[in-house]
Image (cartoon, rainbow, N blue to C red; front, side, top):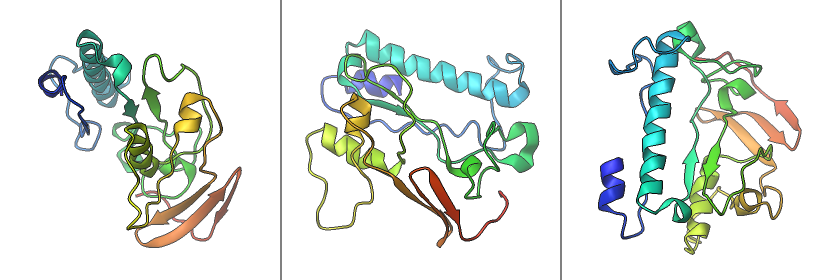
Length: 194
């Protein structure tokens, strides 16, 4: 990622960095093995943190930080059957594969120095909104020849308004299991995490 950023710093670029490290079987390099108080899973998270730091430091050192939108998130909750190797959803119920909040609700960190003010936002958003938001930020048009489920989260990112998303449908496979509208959530089917 660092090499890619340096190579493409003089033109617009999109970098998708998917860390498979926290996915069972866990892997951590020797430099981070045994470093955290949380065991192997904690070591993995510390290595990811280090790698993200290298990416952000590169954006700063190459003079790109104020012109780069960064999103850090995950695709699902913890894989609970792997106990301490599967992560934790904290106070949220269940984990990966279920449609309770512990399986679907993920933190998201956005970073854009000089554009996004530091703070905590509790508005609803989804990873499918990243596509639409990036298109909008880049000045591109959202395709009109197909259904695009993503919404533009710019208002909530820049503090100019609330998130346009107030409804979320929860699927497991091809079946709808639950729907959330604002602060309310209805479960039609429930099943434990994978």
